[in-house]
Length: 230
Image 1 (cartoon, rainbow, N blue to C red):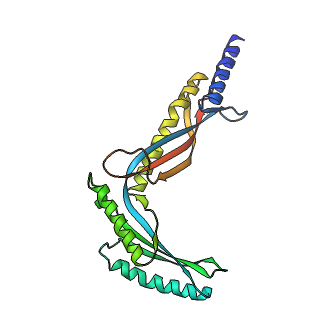
Image 2: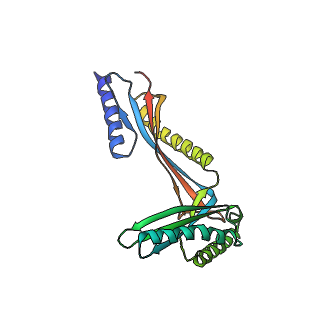
């Protein structure tokens, strides 16, 4: 009787810990072995590999057909101007005209230009050189009568960084789950399931270190652990 009461007290304490302290969830099933579900989080800064800018121009005419015709002419001529500039993007793509207003006979043309960030990741000089690139991009957009978007960054080694961060998030889920397993006088026997809850890249994180701008990879995983048979 005392052992049963002691086990009940231990289980109750673990349940309170799980509910009110953000600890792993302990689940008991009639036919299945008990499991613990916990969330693990991790993040890491990473170098930027490429940057994209979008040149956007709107067209309005007497008819929608005429505005689309003007847009297509622009989308054929503007890339030649961009390629002929000193900047030489690594990639350039145009998007078909997008109708933005039937009533106002308005459409939109978009051109994407992409640059490698290798030259801008160097210590000390990188941020200044990247600012100079942005100035040139703005001037080039003005020369083709377009507005330019803010830069969109892409990581240099996306897959390997994500793999490291996901692994670290799974590792961070283990210790709290193990603590609950010990509290209920059991042990983690196996991993039943790992679910990626969140995997995101922050464009320009506020907290940075180093001499060049970086991106931040953030991961949250939900891990289900199976406890040893009682």
